[in-house]
Image (tube, rainbow over all chains, first blue to last red):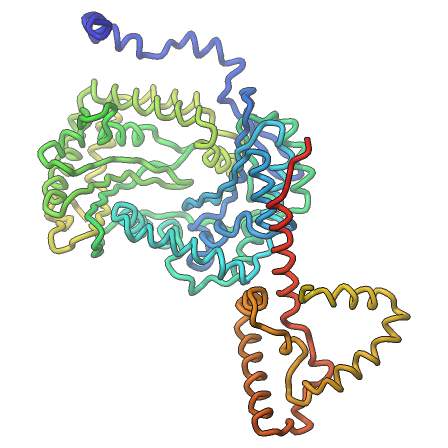
Length: 445
Length: 125
């Protein structure tokens, strides 16, 4: 009955309620829980926000992802060497962390190596020291590489090879950006990995000018104090040189027995300051992910694949420091993917005639995701770290939301029209006998 | 009794220069008389390897060191079969008699001891 009465009020009221009240935002701006404070401590950039919660997420972001590596796989090897024997043994670190109820982890992206710790608020000094130890004192023993690191590297590479969509995205980066940003995120071979080369890379990456300590749920003063104490032995430096990324585009086909996936990608927008919110809106306009269970959703891509059951097509935009990639991943059985691919390309072509209400919906979705990610304790830390290393200031969520609000239908249409003018990137992974070529789908390569 | 229990004694002696000065020639003579140098072996080759700890230590050796070890052992076995000793110039020199395996064994024993300790750990608030 409740649902019925709510519905009977009509959608206009629902929409009105869904729209943000600007007054509310302005009133809370003074104590904005999303606001990052940035400071310097012992030559290291430290950023934090404190919402007063009982737990803290701490991250050390270092600009040392796969685009900076000097030989293939070093970044992956270095990332997997995190929390291994340092001043204290790996086992001791792990057991002590467990005793404190914390957890440690590391992630690798194309641009950053991120070391994370989640713990109770009062244990901040312990975990700042733990992360500092990883950067300063890790021993990089050759036998640890053989016994522990190599197997986890191989496991992740195996997983990549068994996931056609991930493999297609890897190949799309390689086709789109060639070397640097396009180089493989994971260590596809251990050939170039020795504990000596990893140690050298660690010295290049882990230095004061190249890392940021970012925390969510910790007071800035405490964080600066402990950073100064524990990171003071970290050598100073400015990190590896970044070769500017250039978009090339092209086509690639890989056989895989583990399923079928197509990635269609276009040049996107770089991360702030020269961030264009239109591309994010465009990704949400294309969409592909349903907001409710058991239906396809109303986005352009969900409509495009409605004729081909058991296929998915999802658009995403990923922003890097100096470039970006808007990509669509299509998964399904071989023949269905071909048909879906054709429909997806027609959907992209129809972007020039996007309806205003669709754009409005895309903006609302984008805003929700940005705000939800900002609320999440660990999701945004990498982006914040990357920004404070590069520019010394944290990207504030309000700025992104404002940019998204400022996106006009015309701007989205213009960017959408431009997409197909640029050279596309097309990667097909799976049964290459069945999968289409870019030309078959009407893409210009 | 572990492999490294002798190391503590050795360190205690080395830490006292006067004692070290006194013991060094005796130890040197003992090693020489043990005869393994005449077969081209080094002292760490004599450690019994039929147990988990030494097996793990052997796995951790760098490839070149592991290769040299196997070579020395095979040469020594050949000598033993032929009831000979190596020609004088191929004997292990005292300065070449370095402990290449003990550091690894020590490390593994330390790891195991630490694990045992941590397994029975309680947190005192």
